[in-house]
Image (tube, rainbow, N blue to C red; front, side, top):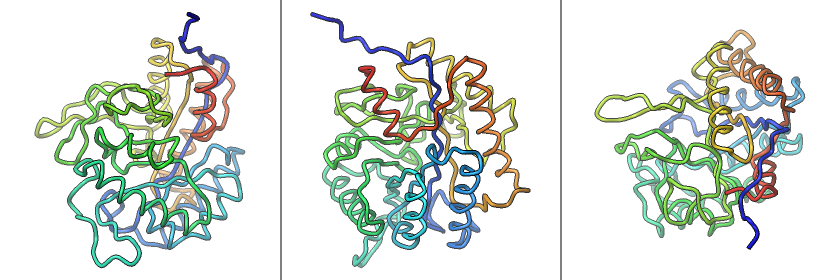
Amino acid sequence: MPSQASRTNREKLFFCYFMDCQTPKKPGGGADQTWEVAEQAVVGLAELFAERGLTHALGFCSEPEVAVRQSALFQETAAAGCWQALHFQIRGYRPQGASEDYDWKRPLSAYSYDEQIAAIRIAKDEWEQALGMPTDNFGACCAQANDDTFPVLAELGFRQSYCSGPGRYDPANGQRWWGAYPHSHHASSKSRLVCGDLDLYEFTLTRTLVPEPGPGGTFRVGDLRAEKELGFDEAAAMARAGIDDMLLRDHPILYVHAPTHNTWDVGDRSSGRRRAVETVIDVAYAIADEYDLELVPATLKDMHEEADRLGAY
């Protein structure tokens, strides 16, 4: 029988960046966030990536409520070439026409398979109706997922996701990712922690690889997001550690995958967070040069297709 081992791409470094577009006043958002700030965030980030010639790498991942409220904005970014995703936080979600919110304190990881598939199906339909386009990309707010989540997403037709937070462990907030596979992989129908048999391809973020202990037996990892306002050396060290770990594991593809939120005005060129986004872009180019790779702006779908071409796990 011929070998089924996956191959590797050592010519390209894929670069993908996205914005979680969350509903103002929801958990995970900014205390002072308004709908106006949310719009300024999207417009500013789109303009920045257009200036750097990286529009294709940029995604806007919106909650259903945001997709409904700002549909024209996301339709415009999609027309410009930005990828789109359903970003879902079940806490506080009220589907159109419903009389009450989902429990504000109960994370997605506390819901069963049947409960998740019902809620996410409604959210997906609401999102697609609002934007007038289908989506096969899904993001779980705050890495809240359980062993049922990936099979639910596959059943609903999603092909790419960012749900996991390898190393993050905070059961009270629905995050149980101790021991999870640290890089991109086909999700498992049996466990959220391992590579598996689903077509759904999960993308972890570029982050620290060694969890730091937190209060009450929790563990945290830091990811490469603008809110941390990392300088070049610290951001480069984080990205480099991720690439080195991928190389040691013979991981099929090499990538830098970084996020931010729609909770601040990206168009403010004096902002430390704006400079931090620019730093991540600079780091991606520098790391590509350091490892003699071609930097390739990529969507989740692009990277999934390359992984499948290589027969990736």
